[in-house]
Length: 338
Image (cartoon, rainbow, N blue to C red; front, top):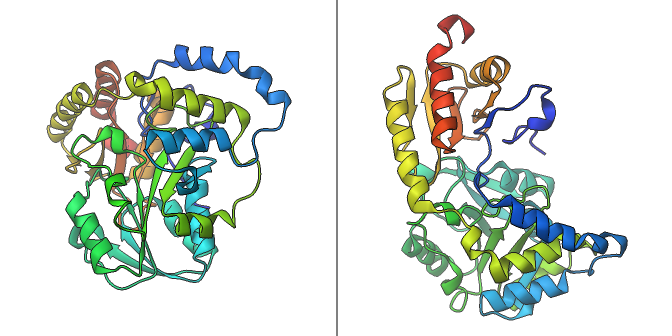
């Protein structure tokens, strides 16, 4: 496992005043979620459903599919590892830079990995391919026709589309409509980012019955806890109004990007989401340390994404007040600190 994801607050004894390192929706109505969890707290005194059956049924209803087209996971990451296990030893294409857990899962299960830069991406024959849409860390959006073209061109290859951040990118089109025509497609959703429940760990996978059956053989019982099952059902039924207001969020992000453009030594990378990469003349791990130590601000050192170097970091767009807090801190940091 890569020891270097965002939101590594657990490593620090410093009070965090602003956390830019995670792409989780920062302004969710957490009071509603707390109230919901309190009403379900007695569920912890009993075993959960072995395969989160009631949640699976609700996911199927939500997407107009059948329960046999769905697997529930302990976050999206568990699902990546299940896929890698089911396709053990496969030839697998991984665009870079992208979410590191695809590579980690494939390494664990001895895949032959082919890394292709996302900037000049060209698919090729393989057994399996992962894409993140929109992509983490750079906010790149894959067009639906690009995805369909890969599915058409390589019908023997299983394409995994991770849509964990799709609620943060209005230009990204969901891949679910392609499921009816392409049995080689798997679509993964994380509920933790859009609804701000990363500590509960909840996600799900959609696909053809044959593919789902193949992967189900590697699941284990009680992988989704009882509280996650209940809040997942609640959010699918009632949570639409809790999702990010992307119009307002992306306007704020554009102002944030323009402010970075005016900072000497910092160059934001174009992104279609609320989070974006920044190339800096400074070393990102030093920048992260100094921002945390001096200001209680946490950013995502992006140097450990394959395809990036030690001069990249990632930030998410937060409130205007916190965005200004980061910009002021960067202006105050002296060159000797970096």
